[in-house]
Amino acid sequence: MIDLAAGSFSTLMGHRSFALFWCGRVATVVAYQMQAVAVGWQIYELTNNPLDLGIVGLVQFFPVVAMSLFIGHIIDRYDRRSVARTCQIVKALCAATFAVGTLGGWLNRELMFALLFVTGTARAFETPTMHALVTGIVPASILPRAIAASASANQTAIICGPAMGGLVYAFGPATVYWTCTTAFVTASILISLIHSDPRPRENKPISLESLFAGLAYIRSRPILLGALSLDLFAVLLGGVTALLPIFARDILETGPWGLGLLRSAPAVGALVMTVVLAHISLERRVGPVLFLSLGVFALSILAFALSRSIPLSLFALVVYGGCDAISVVIRHSLVQTRTPNEMLGRVLAMNSLCTGTSSTLGEFRAGLVASWFGVIAAVVAGGIGALAVTLIWWRAFPELARVESLVRDQ
Image 1 (spheres, rainbow, N blue to C red):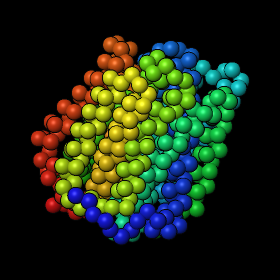
Image 2 (cartoon, rainbow, N blue to C red):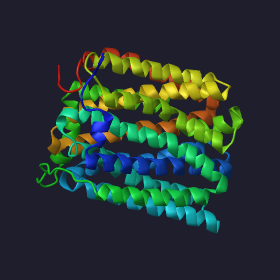
Image 3 (cartoon, rainbow, N blue to C red):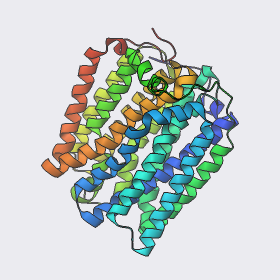
Image 4 (cartoon, rainbow, N blue to C red):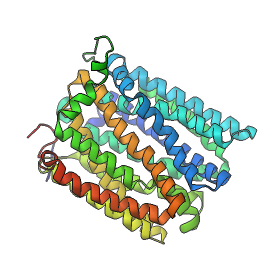
């Protein structure tokens, strides 16, 4: 199923620009995760309403949906480093406003949602741009491992960020927000130092055809359509992140530090898996591996929902994150190795639309169902739904189920 190959993580980090990219991604995701812990705890303390935790995801979901077609066009027309750098500055300004508002006592529920909307807009541009940057940094022969290593940067940050956020929150939420501001600025500097090989740019005038080119490309390729839609619906139904403050405080009876651990646990499993995939390559039966990983992903959600102990809950979330990481690496590798560079931004924007929809709208779904039927019922229903989607997609997209290699169509 997997074979050792040249191009280990240390080799990847020998590429100066990739090392800068990796560190910059760690910095920005650490900051975002720290901010998420502070915002989640702060809002739940203000309102004690699970629905507000869902709205946190919803307000960050709208920009992804509203601007995804436009975002892809921008990525294909302009310097991707400049786009990514600008996103870091916008997020830094929002984090600083969170800090000043908290210290001044005028940061209320509505303003927090407004700042999250701006942050979500910046992330809507940032996510596909960062993925597209990788193709111009490393040779094509080691691109799948670079994608896995990039994912490991993301997961390293998701481990460190929530734990750091929970600990720093002991000094007040403003301290968390100022730390985030510094990290976002650092990420912008690191991204500025990246050297990216020049690639062909889309120079045609903006038209409906060019805007929808990414969507048309995906629809014409069942493997890509199946992979992106599978992730969309599985994570949409199976997301648990928005409800972690409730599990931490009301079910597991812990504090902000416990919330930080719970938010970090999925990234522990994901980091282990992405580091493994950065050293070895999936050479056979990629499709079955994808479906198996998502099946276990769904079962881990059910285990978490029924757990009443912190160790078991953490273990379930570690498995949850590890299985999701396999899906992420396979999906991004399929997209980036099967899409021409001049269209990559638009296709990755569609990919980000799917992942953004699944994560942010999934958080809203979780909060809404929890407010109606209770938090346990919401997570159990999500796990069952994710398992059902996996089984349905196995039959609906046989081309995806039969994929053998990440590098070429079979």
